[in-house]
Length: 286
Image (cartoon, rainbow, N blue to C red; front, side, top):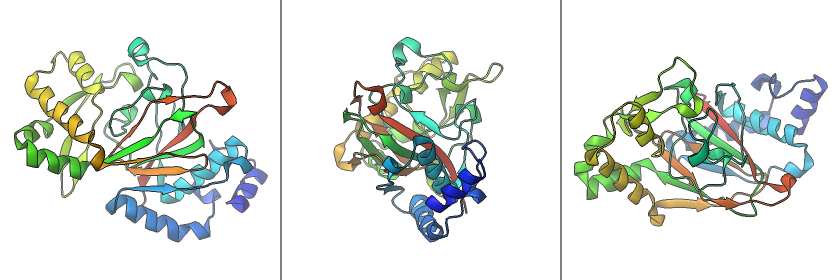
């Protein structure tokens, strides 16, 4: 990795101009193939520990992360600005106060998240296969990651409340205001669960009632009861993977059949110590 980085420095490349072929990593090829298999059809998540972030300026550490990811898949733009690496850190936003302004996201707050998948409102139905998070710095306290399998979630609902599943296979309106261009639809219609040879989930509860209000179709009890039960099942700790990240750790999560979450956090008062993660969206190579 250091040899690749030196070559990139010598050619004057930056994160906006570097390509996967600029990052020859022969020792990573076999590892990347195993990780793709684990992410695609194994447990669906991988944690890589200990990239030595203290040895590199942040922009170079970010480029190393991007180079590793580019050997796993194709990095996708994550917002209307086309950013391929997205900073997950508190920028003082308040969802209740600021929601509806383009760019206002939970990822820019210290708030607890609920279980969800990532989607690209700017890309409509082009949902990334994998969400990567690289920890440059972590919070003073909190900010733990939580994961839940959609298969486990689906089968528990099937076992305990099969009457609720049918609604989850029919479309809900998802609000797109966070990354919306004028002239585009304000909502995206999609079901929570789909099955086409394998199970997939698309979910972020916060955006569903707002999307239905925008569409002029407020949710009724028959719409909300399945969502409430799904949330209650996902919150059972016995089905969750829970872990903390340290600086230099990389979290890779299947975004098709794994829901992810984070706890709220308290940050350091010093700006240069505050929690900062870099998010990468990937479509996996074959």
